[in-house]
Image 1: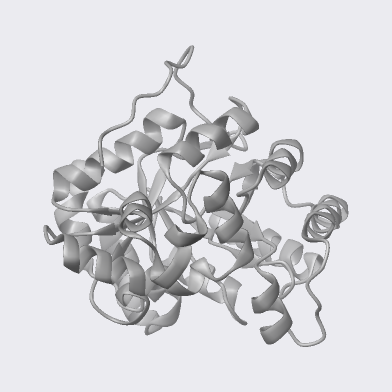
Image 2: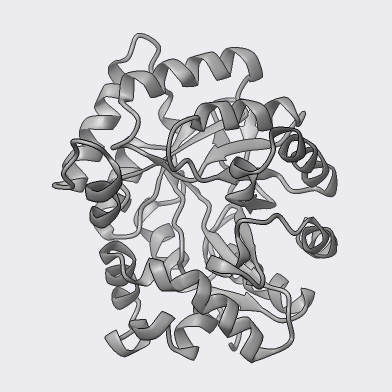
Length: 312
């Protein structure tokens, strides 16, 4: 895809978490960091930190989310660890606030709480007793509970999985920023306009290290197929100008190329730079390869090593 230029910003920004931490550079988003053997993931986290990646983002589907966060924090010294994303239907606000306080006491300000309302089909099927409804109201109430906990979770230490205008407005008003997933640099630009200059914006970017368009799109469709059937993602992509035809059968070439940065190191670095120029403070990359769901169950550290000099 051709590089996109964005209107110049008035001045550079440095967003801080609390009073001591900024989040810049490039992070890693990986389900393997939460699913693999604990000793392996701790060692992998330490190497990713040594390579220069500034944050580690882990999905938290199911129990044990905070154990994973503590394990990764224990294996690193300076890297920020973030939930990407903690499902608010699966974890009560009181439990989350207590866990945040415990982790902050042990590891300082290196934990960023990413929160999301998930998706109707996921919640209705996998969360016992829950019925997906009124996602904006649900998130608003959850944030109020975090504010009123015995030890509140500071707003600057939480970001929302915000795709649409209303959730972005909530992220601006009641959180430290947003962590959008499956988005384009155009979405990053629009999210920055919605959030304003004082909030953290960290989009996820899927990447495929291959010069073969056929291979990259095959991996991309394997990765995207399930996501494109979820209303929140489908609606977000429609707002960006994609059609129902683009969303069909794992995504059109146009859609896959927009959501998955593929090619050599320079091509991937270009896409990451487009997000930054569009207003991202940091970008977290998720490496795809051969396998179910784009091979995301594995952690291709060799690819992260190859990308590190250009991205970190």
